[in-house]
Image 1: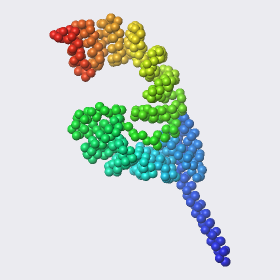
Image 2: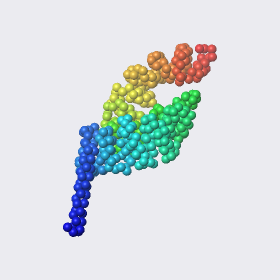
Image 3: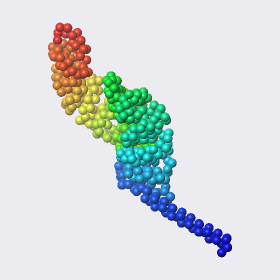
Image 4: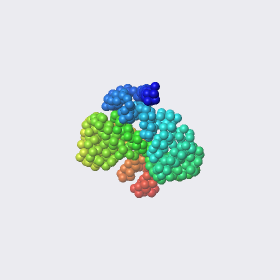
Length: 476
């Protein structure tokens, strides 16, 4: 056999071997994909309109080869956004392998693992995220938090310092450093970091709360008291905004989940960020009165009273017998200073929910404004009889009696409610001032009882001065 023929045989052998190798590799890759390919989760049904069909379409596209990465990414986000965390994690794990340079996949997968407390699995993913997207400082915050929970204080401090390099003055990073300080009992350093955090963000309730504790520890009760008075949102810790997690809103099909997310955003002091989840929830469930009610409140908070009214009126129309919906419409009309709208809303509310003490009370207030004393008495009587511990209704009823020259009836009402609510200062004030005005001989006893109640809101000095001015310095 001459050399050209030998060469051809060798070349053919190489080609065949290469083909076999490629075939084997392709077969191995297909097998690996079959093992990592996520399965269709259980049906969500009407709880998440449209989700089942969308997931089924994704799974159908994932049957072929090579893997449809867009379908896999959509599947992962759909599952994550709708609380299907196990299939979401499976899909993210596949994406981490198929798209190793995309930082979102390890970040989102880590959020699931960290939520389950699986820090050993979350930490490598968070480190990978910071390597792929070093300027996305939220990833560093997540890494710092996970390291702190894993009791790696030096590692956590390094992560928080990495945040400050990219976002100087970031209150979340400074709060994280303060927690590391506290863990190591570095009280002065903790105070410094916390003071810097609240200077950067005075609304940081978490920093204010810890600062109060640190001041207590350092023997500064005045500083601690001041820090506590500055706490906002009830001292609730507010999570840092995570844009990559927020992107999941567009994939959520559960209206209740979206409503909950919007409410949480409002509680965090970010009402504008609540619009997107609420509008998506409304698109999914246009007849859900709860969504329209929340959207109305957010729109009003953002200064759009016209749209707020449209949404609130629609919410009431969808749930006409819901007392809370009715009262929220009344409250909105009052805030908008729409007198005609207020009158209509109260009248319609009382007609639809006659057992509502709140609406009856509002009707009483309107009757007082109109000088309709009989109607006012009837509404306040109902409100107080159905809620005998309600000082507002009792006081309003007593005021009607006083203004219609039925002094004894008004005093009787105030005596009854004071026996139930002795610490409510305004009730004592009402009774004492009425006695002073009428020169009632019982006023001295009412004044002594008011002072003995030790109500912190009672204007004791003013009441005493008014009493002496009316009855004389020696009369008490």
